Length: 170
Image 1 (cartoon, rainbow, N blue to C red):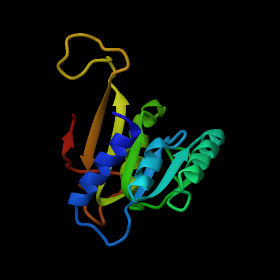
Image 2 (image 1 turned 180 degrees about the vertical axis):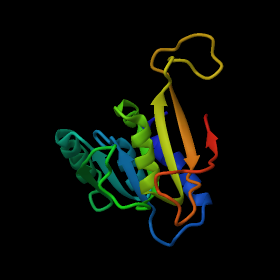
Image 3 (image 1 turned 135 degrees about the horizontal axis):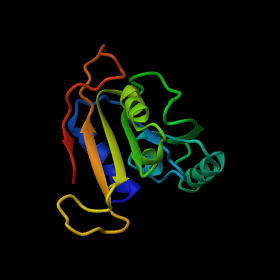
C-alpha cells in the first residue's frame, strides 16, 4: 500500500460520512516529501503536510508546485507529539510510515485523534512489529499493515480520548 492508497481509502471513507459542501481538510503527519498530502490534494482535498524536517518540506512544496497543487497543499514544520493545530481541525488525519517512529506513541496517537473532527477519519500505515502479515507464519521483510479508524468522539468530548471505535485491518 502506498501513501496515495492510504489517502484515497481515507477520503473514500469520508465520502460515506456526512459531508459538508467544502473540500475535505486533510492533515498528513510526518509527511516527508508529501506523497499522501499530494495524493489528497490531487483528489480535491485541502491538504496540510507536517514534518520536523524543513528540507523534506521544501521538496514537498516543490512537488506540489510542479503538479499544479500549490493552492491545495501546504507544508509546515511541526512535531507529531505536539501538533500546532486546534482540536477538531481536520476531516481526515493521515500518516504513512511516519508516526510509527515517534518516541511517544501514545501521545502522538492522542494528538492525531485530537485534531481530527468528530466523525472524521484517522488512517495510519505502518510496518508490523514482526514483519509478518496477520496470520502469516513466516516473516516477510518490508511488510506493513494499514489501519483505518472512524473517529468516534462525540462533539464536546475530551479531545484527548477516543472512546469506542471501529478499526479495520486490511
